[in-house]
Image 1 (cartoon, rainbow, N blue to C red):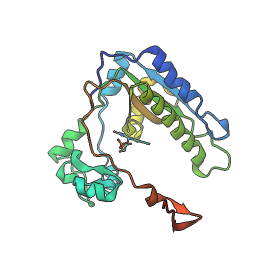
Image 2: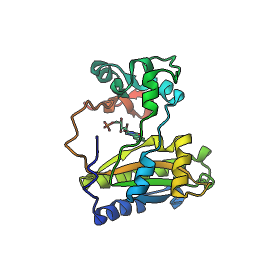
Image 3: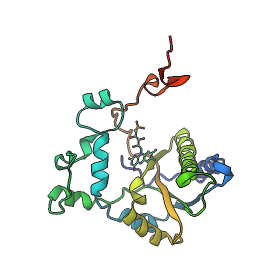
Length: 225
Ligand SMILES: Cc1cc2nc3c(=O)[nH]c(=O)nc-3n(C[C@H](O)[C@H](O)[C@H](O)COP(=O)(O)O)c2cc1C
């Protein structure tokens, strides 16, 4: 959904979003993040113009999450509707053929514009103790994302996560533009702003509570009657 680039996010609202981020619970209170707030048109344009390469692995892994009709998605209750995927990608043995016109076109995709972007970076060298693969550190970054997302939405501001800014090739370009030190990684990035029109209704699915809860031991369903 395109953002209205002329409708700016009020400084007071931005501060509230960052304040919600500031009070995020993090493992060992490590506060393992730095946030770059970008509102300079030139910097936004430089990031926006980065080409998003298509990752074969991404498409193949995503295949597990795709449904090809609303009925299938309603039945699965998880994943995404594959409307945005060209038919040549809807195949578990997908191989990227750069001569494929559709794949080539999608390689030209750039990032949509917005009035403010947040880039959250962290130091993977700073790990939460006793946390295999820094699981607790990564979880803390997820809490940061959620805190800011909820605050933005409560202020009527859209918060659009862009995972592809953290993909290997794109991440390097973003880090160069923003002078991010070599040892830091991008945790997540988001666009903030107001959408041009009311977002179109789309099918949202979730598993039911009974699908993921158990009673006293794993495997025994929790009953609500
Ligand atoms: C860690 C994380 C990464 C996400 N990355 C993206 C993204 O790159 N692009 C996007 O449009 N949505 C992204 N999302 C949003 C999810 O796709 C969305 O929450 C999910 O499809 C369910 O949609 P719904 O909440 O609108 O029902 C992300 C969400 C999370 C928690």
